[in-house]
Length: 406
Length: 234
Image 1 (tube, rainbow over the protein chains, first blue to last red):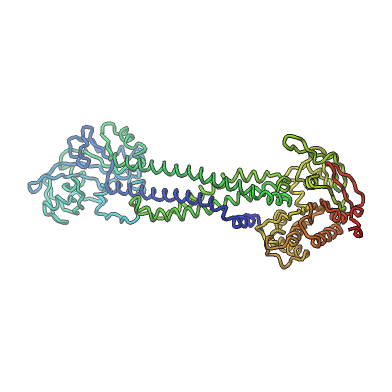
Image 2 (cartoon, one colour; image 1 turned 60 degrees about the vertical axis):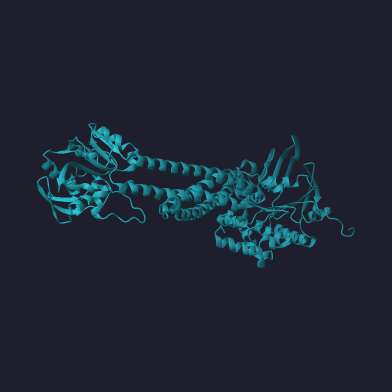
C-alpha cells in the first residue's frame, strides 16, 4: 500500500460529497475549452476569408483616393519601383506577399481594358537585393494563408487572384480577366495585340466580381517598357499578416515610405480584432468564474472534508504521520480532482465545440490537443490552490484535540 | 524509562484556567505495566496524549529514554511515535474505508516499508490475533471485538517498545475485554512497557501497578492487584 492508495480509497468512499466540486471544475473547464476551440477555428475562418479576399494593404501614390479599393491603382500618379526594394530590405514583420503593379489603360476590339504589369515570384527570388529577405520563403499562415478544415487548397492558377502573386510570367505572355476574355472571345493559347505588341494568352482567370475581371496581366517590365514610363509603379499590393496589422504594420510602412499612401481593408481587420478581443475577454471572464466558483466550491469541500476526517487525521498522526504526510494526502487528492476535472472538461468541452461550433459560429471545429494541456493545467492549478489552505489546516491539526473532541 | 518531571498542563475553559495535570513527577520503568485510573474528565486521556508526544505540557519535562519529548520538533515527535510508541484507542479509530489488512499496513506505509514487506507483516500480525480470515473486511463488516483486535495488530505493526492504551476495553463485552487484557499482558511479558488508562478497577488490577489521577495529581495505589474487587463479594 502507498499513501496514494489511502487517497484513492478515501475519494471513492466519499465520492458523492466530491461530486459537486468535480462538477464545478468539469463544467468550468469544459466551457473554457469549448470557447477556446471555437475561437481558434473562428479566427482561422476569418483569416481564411481575408486570405480569399487577397491583398489587404495597398501602397499608392500620395495623391490617390480610396473610393474603389480594387481600382485604386488606376489613377494618375506614380512612385519609383525602388519602394519594393525598401520594403524587402526592411525589418518589417508581417509582409506575406508583395505584388508591385503598374497599370495602363488599353483598347482591344474597340473596348477599354486595363493592362497591369506584375512581377512574377521567380524574379523576386532572382534579385540579389531581395534575396534572403524571406518574403516568399517565410512560411505562410501568420493569420492569412491558413488551412481551414474542409477548405481545399487553391489551384495554382488562382494564385494571382487570391494572393496577387504568380510564379512565372514570360515577357510576351498575358493572363486575362474573365470578362475581358469573354468580351474578346479569347481562350488559352490564343494571341491578343496590346499596346502594339502581340501577347500569348497563358491563362483565363476565374471570375472575381471586381475590376480585375476586366484586366490583362502581363510582365511588369514589359508594361513599363510599352508605356515608356521607366521603372515606376502605381501600386504595391501586400498581403499583410492580420496580427501584425493590428500591431501597427500600416504605420510602420508609412514611416518607411513617407511619400506614399498606405491603405488597408480596415473594417475587416477591425472586425477580427474586435472578435478576438471579445473572445479574449469572455475566456478571461470564464477563467475568473472557474477560479472563483470552482475554487470556492473545492475549498469549501476540502475544509468540510478536513473537519469530517479530523479523528482519522489525529489517528494517523498518533501512528506517526508528520505534517508533510497529511499535507501531501490532501494535495494528492486535489491533484487527482484537477486531473479528472481537466481531462473530463477537455472531453466534454471538445465535444461541445465540435457539435455546437458549426451551429454557433458557423465554422467546422476539430479537437485540439493543445487545449488538453491547457485544461489540465488550469484545473490542477485551481484545485491545488483551493486545497492548500484546508490541507495546511489538516497538517497543523492538534492530534490530541482531534482524538479527544469526538 | 519514561520520566515526567514536574509536569503541569493547564487549559483555558471559557476564560478560566483548568488544571488537567498539576506538578506530576513520575517514573515508569522499562517493561512496566501501569494502569491510570480516575473518574471521567479527570485528565486520564490528557496524561496519555502527553506521554505520546501529542500534547505539550504547560510546564515540566517528559522524557522517553534519552529524548526530552517536547524539546523535539513536531515532526521529530511524529518520527519517535512511529518508531517507539503504539496507541490503542477506546473507539479503535480504524480508517473506515480501508480493509483490516490495509489498516494494519498504515503504520508500515508511514515507516516507508516496501509493499511486500508491509503485507507479510500485516498478515502475520492479524494471524496472531486470529483474524486471518478477515483480512479483506472493512471495519463496518467486523464485530467490535474484531475491530479492536485489528487496532491491536495495527498498534504492533512497528514493534513499539511503549504501548499507550486509552480505555482499550471500554466498548467491549466482558469476555472480549478479558481476551484483550490477556493479549496486553502477553505483550508486557515480551518486555514492552504499557501505560493503560481505564476506569474499570477490575481491569486495572491486571496491571503491575495502578496510579490514581485526582484533581490532576497522581496518587500511587501501590500494587494494582489490591484494586481488583474480591470475587467473593461480587
